[in-house]
Length: 275
Image (cartoon, rainbow, N blue to C red; front, side, top):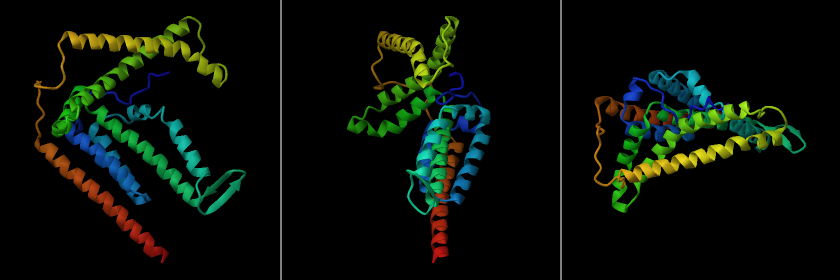
């Protein structure tokens, strides 16, 4: 039932994307999402799709593994499509009761759904190709300049690392609980929505108990090892920029500028075409 959750999990590999510095990949996610919301035409999305295909190919993460992570997102995509498609104003081409479909609504629904899918896939590529420890080190480096204003960069990075580490653990725990409840005669597939919602209670209650128990054990272990935050802590493998990281920065700059250029040129072309 929950075995296909792959978002937030690391996929072992030795690709060029895996070897990149985590700071490069963090900036890459920011640039990617920024370009995604800058682009507002079909040619921009074609360029974005091509860039995503190249990224997935270089990362060597199987497409089937990525699509598994989208399994629990399709409901949100369908919901966004529904509201944008039937409740957007513009040139009405169909209407019935409170529902109406417009040309602008169709394009808005398509673009919104694509943005949602691409944001999730793009952000997931960060965790697919970066271990939680490396990601934590990268976040600490990014937040380091904010130490002067007492920004808790290390604490935030540690919390994100722990959250990512707990995703596969809790997923495995859910599957164990489901199998245990099925062995006791529980039925999660029959009945209506309310019956299925009530059937989740025997899963959620033991899951929360287990999560709190693991959190308590982790806190106890950290305290027993005299953990006191990021002050004066050293790294076994300090982050250092390599040549490939500098090249990746130039590629990200080109990608952002190309996205802006495509958007501006296509908007100008469409404006001239309507004059």
